[in-house]
Image (cartoon, rainbow, N blue to C red):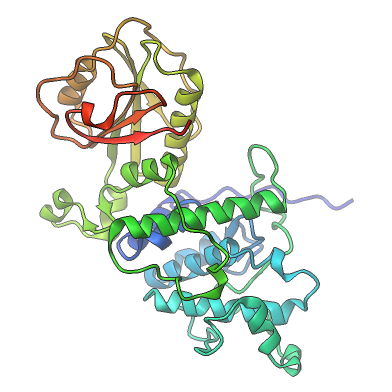
Length: 384
C-alpha cells in the first residue's frame, strides 16, 4: 500500500500571488478576469509549474513565485482556458501528446491575442489556432507524435488525467464530468456577458470555433454581485479614482484592505434561502479576493452586529423580526465609512433622506419593490 502524501499548505503569499494576477487581468479584460475569478487554483509541488485536470488548476507555488508578473498572468490564463474549454475530457481516446499540442496551439493564440505573455518556446500557428481543438488535432502530422511534447518546459501545457496526490481535497459535493462541463459553460457565458457590459472591446474569443457552441449569455444575479463587490479597487474600466489620487499602482493594490458592509433585512420579508444564497456568494468572493473584508449586519428597525464574515465562517443566526427601517444601517455606514454596502431586502421600508457617499447595491427577492422605488444605488434581482 502506497502512502498518499499529505496535501501541501500554500505559503502565506500564495493567495496574494493569485490576487495580484486577478487584479492585473481585470485591468485588461472583463472576460478573462471573470474566468479567473471562478477558477479554483490550488498549490501542488507535483507539477513542474502548472497543470489542470479540467476541474481545478494546480500551481507550483515556489516556481510560480519566481515568474515575472506578466508571465504568471499568461500562465494562469493558459491553464484556465484549457479547463474552461474542456480540453481534458474532450480528448477521449485520442493520442495524448498530439492532443496536448493541438490544445496548446489554440490556447497560446488566445493568450497572445489578449496581449499577455506566453513562454518563449510556446508553439504558435496563426492558421490553426482559430480552429477547434479537434480540427487542429486532425491537421497535425502523425510523425510529430514522436517528438517530446509533454510540455513540462512550456507554460501551461500539462493536461492531467487526474489531480496530483498532494493537492488539497475538494470541499463540498464531488462533481462528475457532466457537472464540471456545465459549470465551465456557465462561467464562459458569464465572462462573455461581463465583457459586453463593460463596453470595452469586443468578445476576445468571438472568432474562435471553440466557443461557437455557446448560446448568447444572460448575466445572472451571482455574476452581477461579483461585478459589484469585486470591482474595487480597480473596476474593469481602470483604476479606482481614490487609489490613483494616492499614487498607487495596480501591482500594489493587494495591500489595500477594502471594507464591504453586508446588511440583511430580517423584518420577515426575506426568506432563509435568499439569505443563505447571498451570504454564500459573498463568502465565495471573499475567498477569491483576500484583500476584501466584510461585516454582516441584520436589521429591522434596528441594526444588529457587526458579525465578521470570512470565506469559511459560519453564518450567524438572524436577529430582529420587526418592521423595516433602512436608516439604522445607513447610520452604521456613516460611522464606519465602508467602501460599499450590499443590502438584501424587499425594499419596503423607510429610506434615509440623503444618499450615502459609498456605492449601494440593493439585492431584491421576487415580489420586492420596483427599481424606480429605490431612491439611490443599483438594484439586483434574485431569480424566481
